Length: 355
Ligand code: COI
Image (tube, rainbow, N blue to C red):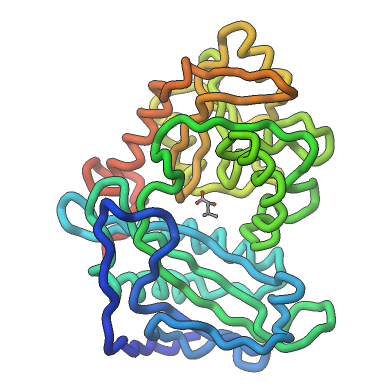
């Protein structure tokens, strides 16, 4: 698609929230990006429109069979006033990989990048400025054909919406209590775990609800085959530090290839730390805790960046990590990533795109 992006500005403006009042994903900006796909035309009519509801036929495929994918990234207002997207090309690549897995036609990567740049550019006044706040960007593709047969749809809608956000968890960058579940799983080998698709999140709700009722912030998922190896923590990738070794599960198809995961691994390798992408069993974690070697545990994700785990509960046993406090490496990673995002530190690998 080589069509230029049409821009149709809203004639009204919504009131903007104060940075201090921002939660996650509750407020949306004045505009959205849209494009349509039809089999005979490909992707067409890329445009920025006033934010508003989509009108869908009740038979629309996505409402029945969940043929949908999304991604999530952020724009930051730097200390120098510049607005930067964090690793947008990597997010576009992941979005297209998710799309292919769901039989959704991928977007031209250049158009996808321009969609993010154009809509954030139009709503640039919505990017909050306090460190810890940002503009969350949610590109999404849904199957829009009104048809109830089970097969890939012939038409799709791509949209990008924007939401000014603060911390993902109400507790902020504070250690969370996590319940290790072996009764439910989020992904199986050969399944959809590696794609950012809506159904994965629907499938996670029941277990995380049970965990919340039991007083935990989230669950730690184990692998779907042995119910033994660490998979993800809530909606985030997981990392554990056992002695000198930092371990995170490998990308074998069940794990979402997190962009923050990739960034954290790159930084730690640069710092000369021993980083392993390998399977780690819950028994190894319990055993390391028993020896006093389970030094730090944290989750990585776009929404929360780095989320320290202060406590893990498994089969009725409670493991407190680093006295329930943020560990030094967890803090170092958070500070290093945030410094790049807000333009406070050099960006040697070109992770940010100023717009
Ligand atoms: C993340 O960015 O960590 C997520 O995947 C959470 C998002 C689904 C709200």
